[in-house]
Image (tube, rainbow, N blue to C red; front, side, top):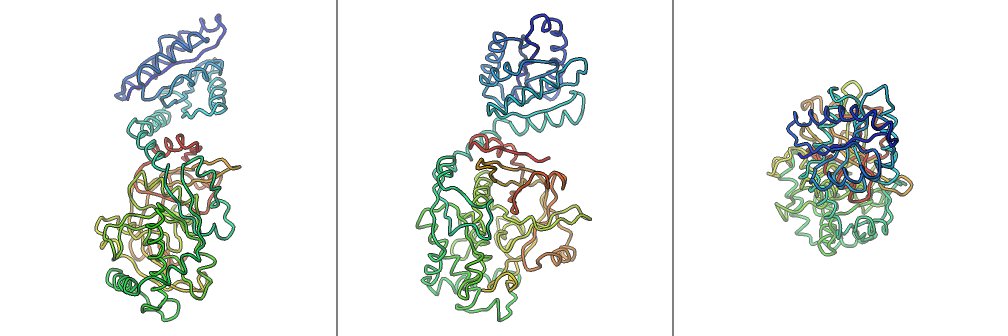
Length: 485
């Protein structure tokens, strides 16, 4: 990468002259380390001390096509110089605060990042000596997340949201404010049109689905799942059974999305459909919508679908899907196994069976699936729960959009998926809800960090590292990115 670097100093001429060599020394040390990392470095030729030097040097860096620029602080500097430089530089900015106890460099660092926040300019930060391995890793992580190709993918994903149509089938159930949305805000901020319909629409559409399509779905599930645990009560066979109801609802939603041009959607599910005698749990419809196949199309497009009509969850998932091209996890933050350091991410159906093996051959994924009777404790109307265990993955990106006082923000963190073998996976599943799908995950942030910062019962994920792309997408969508580490 081509990295620019400039150093700020005290605006008083007498002081600036006396610390000039100190400032250059810190700048050169950082520049030398960057070169040792294989980067091309463009150094400011003067220390930024007043309006003239600030304009001159920041425009020099702006015209050098830098991929990122480091704002360096080792002595006191006036924060308005930082703001003036930031207004002229479009490249990502990293604020670097050096250890220099004889001078108030840290004061300048914190004053300047406060200034950048005030003017709404995104930036990263690293605080400490350039020889410190922790500081070096912070700089490496920032640069990796702001590589030109990473940023271009983030911009592209943000732009791809514009013009999409979201199907909101009723509203968020059980009073979840984190799932509720302002339809006008979505249109003005993201360019996403919200198509609102009652779930009664799905009920009467489901009744009209042709019998042969339902029977084909039943035979497909019987042939391709590991097992269906019929109990004759909650989970019943036949074209008029409870599993058939779920198939009918799925086909109705699929047809409606096709006919109305709906790109992604949210289904209330609870409490109406799951309490209605002629209803069903939405586990099977949601799993199929989020998956890569069904009996009518072996290579069907993924239709991102959020349960409980968690619309902010659906938008998070759609953005992750646009970046990765894969299905996306929707899960509850259900339980933390402190002895193992893992989270049990489970939910009553949202997990796409693709996660079971993440194979392009859908048969490999679906043969891990078992359909269990939906527990009457939660779902009076019956139907099947879709149970499997997610395959391990070394690198996973977790994300969630929420609002604070009406302003959107996204919490981001990385981690992994793990498994412990069939016997231990089953043992752990029995501690929560056995019939549901399970993803066992490790987070690369502490439980305390999560507890103090995260603010949703739902979490979403894709395999791979997409933090840089998501940060860039957030910047282009006027969303505050909050990376938990």
